[in-house]
Amino acid sequence: MEQLKRSPWIFIPTLYFIEGLPYVLINSVSIYMFKSFQVSNQVVGLTSVIMLPWVLKMLWSPIVDIHGSKRSWAIYTQLLLGLCFVGVAVVVHAPSFLWPAVAVLVIAAFVSATHDIAADGYYMLALTHQQQALFVGIRSTAYRIAMLAGGAIAALAGLVEQATADIPLSWSMAYGAMALLFGMAFLFHRWCLPVAEKSMNQPRGAVPFLDAFRTYFQQDKIVPILLFILLYRLGEALLSRMAVPFLLDPRAAGGLAFSTATTSLMRDVFGLSGLIVGGILAGWLIAKFGLKKCIWPMALALNVPNIGYLYLAVAQPGLTIAYAVVIIEQFGYGIGFTAFMVFLIYIAKGIYKTSHYAISTGFMALGLMLPGMVSGVLQNALGYVQFFILVLLLTIPGLILLLFIPLEDKST
Image (cartoon, rainbow, N blue to C red):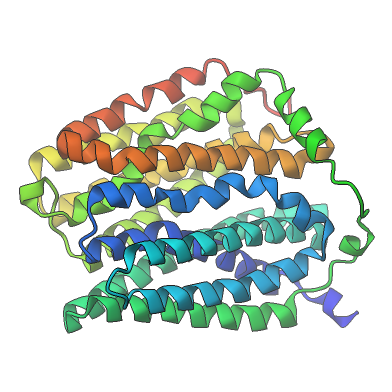
């Protein structure tokens, strides 16, 4: 019973830091690794298939619900993630490392998506409603700090690469260090996570799987809702997969020729700092004025700064201007993404709120994965200037769909 008295301040920040870290290691840091090994942009785009587990996680979330406790799922998936990153650290030394590395990262993504389900479920079981409201900002901040940590890891790998000229060693050290961190997280959370009593009283038996889907798809305006989820970040989905290759590629290929260390510091440390500030600002504005009043300017904040990448591709300026463009774009992304996530929470209704939210985030991941998979092919065919023009054009469908989705605030 002593465990139950532990303050959420001890374990919620660390739990959500560990939830965010594998996502950035698998989806973002891996791009730097692939580019270090001279993998083409077309193939980098195709590696977006790594995101598939986050698309499909709704399909096995009922298993996490009824078998074992959320606490156990969260703890042991952290151990498995550590083993997966050991696998990455090993396969980067193989002569043909690419597809073995992708395979290990896909496995890690399945484990990470399962950890997401368990951690979010544990959050709702272990905390009171008042505590949940209090810690929602804390968990979001911890998740963003994990993204900053991932950027720092990429930067350190880049520095090791510059110092040693040994690419496999630099990435083996990076993912090996992350494996050690997840092993420590497993031991820490096994000790400190309280047993959530309510999880012991959950009914066992048939999963209301079909009911959850039926009620989700019977929502009013479900077609524009689904189209909005898939298309709101269409331009950003293309941009985010090719932004790092653009900053790394030589100027002769239309890129800006920055080093791995410089690029990761720019985009994944300073840029993500802008994203965090934008997210915090957006949350405050939505709480004060409501989603309905905020969604339009926040959607524009997401999309308009993408013009900066078009400018970078045309003018190919120096480091200072590139920093400014990246930070502004990430700040706007933080604002627009926060509004999007509040909308997903808003449409999760009734007794199946958790399942509805999982379904929405699955479609959200699909809306990132599919454009990401073709992003490299499009960039190679168009060149960076025309590619960024396409990015800007593809922001229009999501803006149009704002006219058709339900935006009434829950408070009204």
